[in-house]
Image 1 (spheres, rainbow, N blue to C red):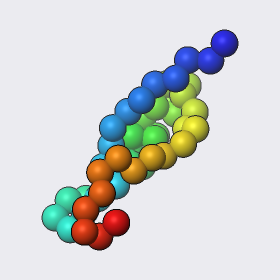
Image 2 (spheres, rainbow, N blue to C red; image 1 turned 180 degrees about the vertical axis):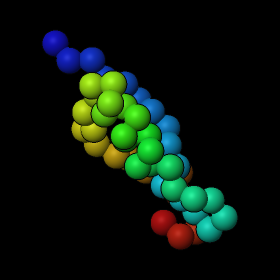
Image 3 (cartoon, helix red, strand yellow; image 1 turned 120 degrees about the horizontal axis):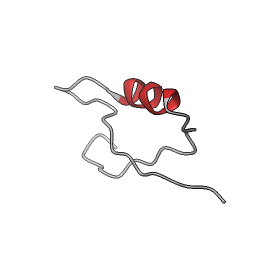
Length: 46
């Protein structure tokens, strides 16, 4: 049986820095594996 966890993070933007690498590293240290990344907010830039 697998346990899944959904975590929001930032892929960056025009005025914000990305934080996805730090999020991945933090959860990897706790034993989690990254399965998939889904974009949930779309704007004029895709």
